[in-house]
Length: 307
Image 1 (tube, rainbow, N blue to C red):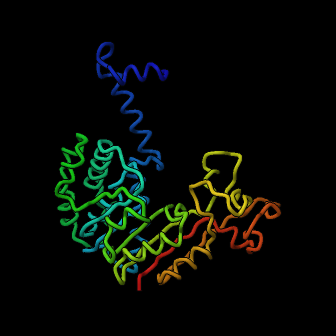
Image 2 (image 1 turned 90 degrees about the horizontal axis):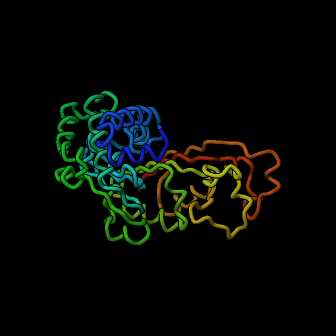
Image 3 (image 1 turned 180 degrees about the vertical axis):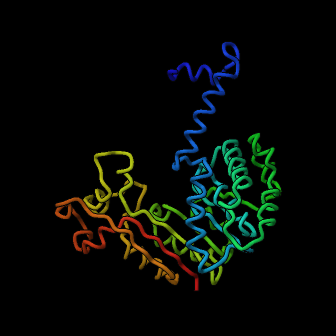
C-alpha cells in the first residue's frame, strides 16, 4: 500500500473496505512498534530509561516516599518515567522539559504503559513496596480516560506534574529550592550550553542529602543524523563554535563543574570509545592539549549527592 492510499484509508476507512483494512495496518504497525526498543511512546523504552535510573539511585537512596524529578522527560512520553517511579513508591513526581507534549498521544501512551504494568508487574515492580501498593498506585489513574486521550481527567488524582520550562529562568518559579529528594536524567546535561549556571540551579532545587543520577552523552550529536560527521567531529571546530545543541564539555570538565557547585560525587564512570585514526591532528582549541584518554570518553554516568 503506497503512502497516498494509506493516508486516504486512515482519514476515511468506511467508504471502501470499512474498518478491516485500517485494523490490518493498526495490528501490523503496533507489533512492529512494540518490537522497536527506540519507540519513544512504547513501554519498552520507558522501562529501559526508568530502570536504569532506579538501579543507579537505589544503592544511595530509595524513591519510596520521596519527591522525584525526571529531568528532560521529553515531548513524547512526559509522564512515563515519573509513573514508573510513582508505582514504586515515590510520593509525587515532577517531569521537566523544554518541549510540551501532544496531550492526547501522551495520555494514550501512559495508558499503554499502565496496562503493561498491570499485565507484567514482575517487570515493573522494582522497589520494596508491597505488590498491593503497586496495584493501588495504578488505580489512582483513570485508565479509561487516558485511553480516550483525556490527559487531565486521567491524571486528576495522580500526584504527577509536568513542567514545560528551561532550567535557567522559568523553572526558578516552578521548582522551589530544596524541593527535590531524588532526580535522574538521560542524555540531558550535555544540552546545557551554560553548564555552570544549570548545575548550580540543579544543586539549588535538590534537598540536602538529595541524590541525582545523570547519564551524559558526550558525542557530536550531528553524527546521529548526518554520516558526514563522527562522534568526535565537533572537537575539530573552532573554540567559539556552537550548534546550539551540545556544550562539548569533556568528562573532567563536567566533574569539575559538579564539584564546584557543591555536589558530592558518589559515582563517576566513563565509557570509552576510540577517535578515528589521525583525527587528533585536526583537534582545535583546548582539545589539542587534552590527553587522548580524556578525549575518548563518549558517555559519563554519575551519581551525585547534595551534602
